[in-house]
Amino acid sequence: MTLTETGTHAQTGAAVDGACCGEPELAIRLAPSAAGMLVIMDRGFPGVALWRAYTGAGAHLLIRARSCVAARPIEYLPDGTYLARMNLAGQKRAAPGHVVLRVIEYQVDGGEVIRLLTDLLDHEAYPAAELAALYRERWEAESSYRQVKTFQRGSQLVLRSASPELACQEAWAHLVVHHCLIRIIMELAAGARTDPDRISFLKVLKHVRRSVIARTVTTAAKMTDFMDTLASKVGHKPGSGPRRPRVADRLLKRQNSKYSYRGKGQLLRPTRSAPARTITLHPALLQLLKQRHWAMARSCQA
Image 1 (tube, rainbow, N blue to C red):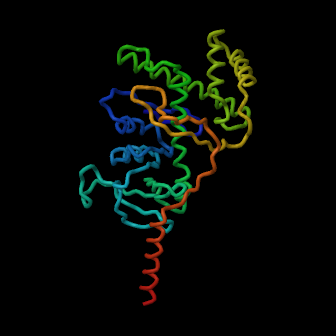
Image 2 (cartoon, rainbow, N blue to C red):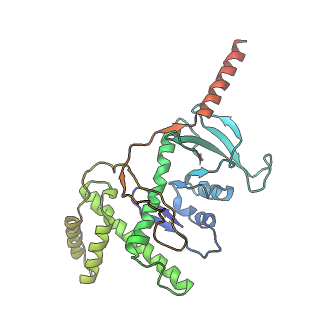
Image 3 (cartoon, rainbow, N blue to C red):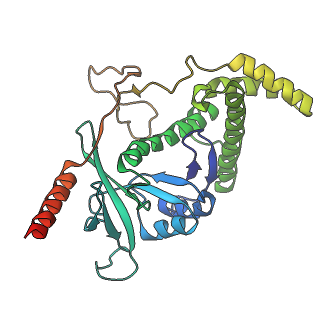
């Protein structure tokens, strides 16, 4: 489990354990490293213990949740979101120990309803539309994992180590090397005044690997020469603006296989340009809010 920056793909924290330890438990260990951050998580993580760990450490949360989590509104906000309670597992609704949070429901291009939980309760300071648009940045962590497992590690299916202790040590080594490579990318991006996403990780990896084999950098002058040479060779991707939206076919994998599963006659198309997604708040909440305001207005007139 890693704590990954969505803007740079740098992994600022990590927790490694055996298969007997679940992801939520590992995520709780990373709470002290998340102070001052807005942490985005998928829907397998909501829980009172995790919520208290991160908010107690000074971090903010934006987590996707299933429809059964914090499902009972206790107060509707003017922007269509609402406040709800998240209880401990197996706890009754009126029992103590719950946490109060804000629920944001929205749809992307008219698809399924997505529910987000956040501790940012102020609807004016933290608009629901901005938080909904920000949640998709969570998938930048998958690009970071791809950099480690596909490009940096190579074509091996598993780690080379044959014991749990050595496998853990090898995993930490991969994370440290990746962090150093991202640090180089950030320096190159700062020098070129461009986004770190516009620097090719694969090019940086290849040139750094060649330089390590060719020589050992031991002085500040050699490091400066190395960075200048790397900047001239790597460059940045065409265009200085943000990356264009891309889409790729989503296919399942066979179990214990690294190759994508394709149906009979089904072709795997390369990534291609995609139109911008349209995010709309869930209309049912807005309609309920309007009816509530109408009822209040009628009672005042009466």
